[in-house]
Each structure stands twice: as structure tokens, then as C-alpha cells.
Amino acid sequence: AQTVTQSQPEMSVQEAETVTLSCTYDTSESNYYLFWYKQPPSRQMILVIRQEAYKQQNATENRFSVNFQKAAKSFSLKISDSQLGDTAMYFCAFIPNNAGNMLTFGGGTRLMVKP
Amino acid sequence: EAQVTQNPRYLITVTGKKLTVTCSQNMNHEYMSWYRQDPGLGLRQIYYSMNVEVTDKGDVPEGYKVSRKEKRNFPLILESPSPNQTSLYFCASSLNTVTEAFFGQGTRLTVV
Image 1: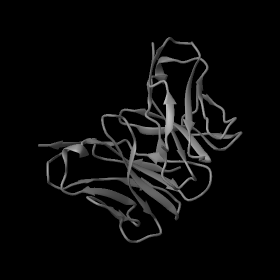
Image 2: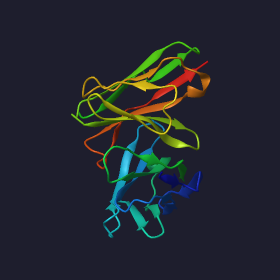
Image 3: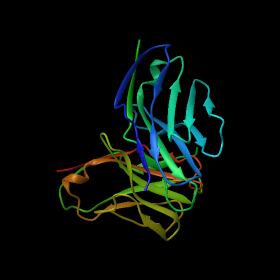
């Protein structure tokens, strides 16, 4: 069974600064996908970024980037130039590349961006 | 507009009174799933479906039922709700297991 661990229940950052959210996972699979989802106060789950395990290049989406370390089973999210709208719960999620199952989520990190 | 629609968004009920939370998607997705979100535990999968009439248990299926009679709909049924099923519930759909999952807006259920 897969597990996903987010060791930081809460974090805060000043507006315009950079923050990194940690995520580690445990799996015996070699092919899989990793995701970061954002959940603002509206409760909507929004995909932030996606990483395919067979790709060595770290994924980037505008101000969001990941540091994917496959050997260490680590998948951290870096948010640059933090904005007030980044305040949200952030969930790391994992899915193996085989049919049937769906996402396994971490416990989440609540991020507060301060003005 | 591509979306996953859940109803109701809020529900307060009493122990033992059967209820159904509906979920519908308009993207012709094969995969649909139900999750519950609890503080500190993230989202945990209740049931998932790979296609019509194909469903399977997730991590926390006890006390829940689902059905997939049509591709677009995937209702969650609580035959006899109990207070430990008080939670935030999400329905999600995706084209396959590794593409982006689209989530509904959540249903806040309280069982008293």
C-alpha cells in the first residue's frame, strides 16, 4: 500500500517571499504520478502541478515548481513570489501507473500568506 | 463548462436515516471516485468506479454504498448514517487513472 506524508501541518510566509512545502511517499511501484492540489477556503480542489516519475526534469507551472527526488521518495512544492491568493490547504497526492486505483493523499499543509 | 456537480452541498441528518449524495460529471470520464476529508488525514478514498457497473472499494468503504448505472452519475449512499461519518465528501472524475482528477465542490455532512 502507498502512503503519503506531509510533515508540516501549518506554514506561513510573507507576501512576495518563497516557501517550500514538503511531501514524502512510500511505494514499491516504479512508475507513478505525483500531484499537488490546492484547496482554498471555497473548498474547491484545484490541481497545481503534476509530475511523472519517469521524467527526471522537475515540473514547473508559473510560480509553482517541484523538487522531485525519486530515490529519496520526496516531492516538495516551491511557491515563489507568494501571493495572498495562495493561502490554502495544499495536498500532495500519489497514483501508481496501473489500472484500477485512484489518488492517495497526504494529510495536507495549511499555508497562510501574510501581507 | 466541464464540471463535476455534487448535491447537496450541506446536509444535516440524524443517525440511521438513509441518505444519498448525488454526483454527476459532463466530461464523459471513465473513472469516478468518492473521498472523505477529515482534519489531519487528508482525503481518503471510499469507493471508485472504472466504468458503468464496475465499482471497487477504496480505503474506507465501511458504511457506504455506491452504484454506477450510467457513465455520468455516481451516487454515494449511506444506508444507516452514524456520527463518525460526519465529514466533508468529494466526488471526483478523470479520463483515466493518471490524468487530472476533477473534483466536485464538496458536501459537508453532519450526522447527529
